[in-house]
Amino acid sequence: MPALDWDKFSALRGAPEHNFELLWRGAIRRTYASKGQFLSTAQQPGVEFHLRLTASCDALGDPPRWWGWQCRWYDVASGRQIGERRREKIVEAIRTTEKWLPDLTDWVLCTRRPLTPADQSWFNGIETDMSLHLLTGDDDLPDLLEGDAAPLREAYFGELVLTPERLARLRREGVAAVKRRYNAKLHIKVEAEKVLEQVLARPEAWPVLSRRAAALGKKPSSLRRTSGSSLPTTRRKTPSVGC
Image 1 (cartoon, rainbow, N blue to C red):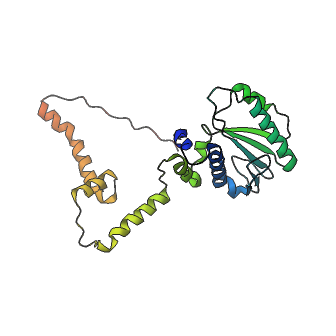
Image 2 (cartoon, rainbow, N blue to C red; image 1 turned 180 degrees about the horizontal axis):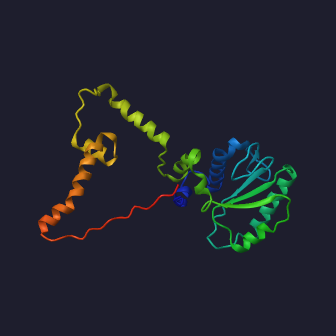
Image 3 (cartoon, rainbow, N blue to C red; image 1 turned 135 degrees about the horizontal axis):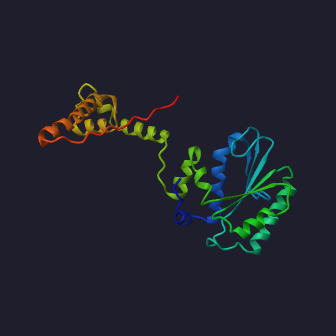
């Protein structure tokens, strides 16, 4: 997936820290909420939102796993450590989660950029019965902004996202504008429409494409007669296809 344009994201109305949380919440909810009980409340202690699985999921595992996500924007340069104060806040969030959601099995920290190796080693060494995970906006979020979550890429990063459903809707809207004036019996195909049918290899263009393919097959013989000399003949081997 293409990289996300965080400059456009930072220019959005509102604090980037809050928008970052909303973005992750929307991506997780649209991608995984159908697999369990998704809950997000104001001032949720320990995690911003969580999901208790009621169905198996390739990415999250099987019930009764219970996932929680904590989102931290951390607008620090790549390669710099997050610092002692931020580390303390992470540990505090983990302990709060243990208190208020004691059955949570997986705790996820979502940051914009990957943590440094030293910060990752520290994070993975935190003592807790929960499994700890790290996700980043740079590496992991783009893969989530697909399918039902694809509109979030357009909303937060200004990218045009064309899904089959959206293309169908745009086609319906475009046709509706001229539908009353269109009469199939009176319609005359112009050259541009014929060329477009050939480019798209539509059934209407197959006879033309067949004739052109046959004409191209005769070109070598025509060139040999014109040049008066034999041209080298090459044959492309057709690879065998196993069953």
